[in-house]
Image (cartoon, rainbow, N blue to C red):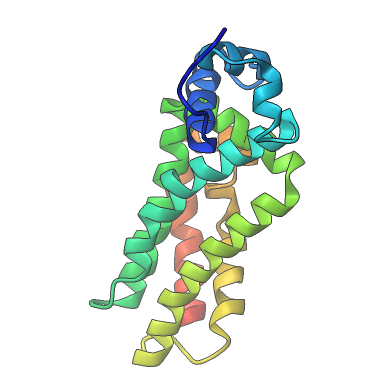
Amino acid sequence: MANETPLTKEAILDAAEQVLRRYGPDKTSVTDIAKFLQVSHGTLYRHFASKAALRETVTERWLDKSVSEPLEGIATATDGSAAVQLRSWLDALMQKKQMYALEDAEMFAMYSAVTLEAVDLIAAHVDHLVKQIAIIVERGMHSGEFKPGDAHATARAIFLATTKFHHPAFVREWSRKEIAQDFDAVWSLLLAGLQ
């Protein structure tokens, strides 16, 4: 079991994602990842203190690459209506989460489990998303499209009001045929409060 290439944190995370996708988060062990990398499991513990720490880091990286980074482009756009931009951002968030629940089920399952275990990691992810919403809200307030107020508090309220449509705890709700209609009703209410 001797792999001659230097083992980096990124290489471990790449391998962990592949193994997690193959076996699922419940059946994947640190030993499975070590075998995939052709190293001892003790070698992995030099980079990550525990299996939980490895899972959290994999999830954090996945959330950044799959959710936060793609949404950043929508949040930082500076042209057009802030209301249209905000709706586009929310639509993209919901579509990404719903798509990953279907098409990347193992990683989504791990993300769902980590939301219950790694409170600080998930709080940081939510804060990052709220900051993106706040950029849009602040732009709308500046242009007069939205009424003045605390952009960050408003952004947090928007995120919380739409939780049913993007939080993994509600994954079973997303396949209901009324879900789009439900979101439209929430969106109308939010928009009326913003304008």
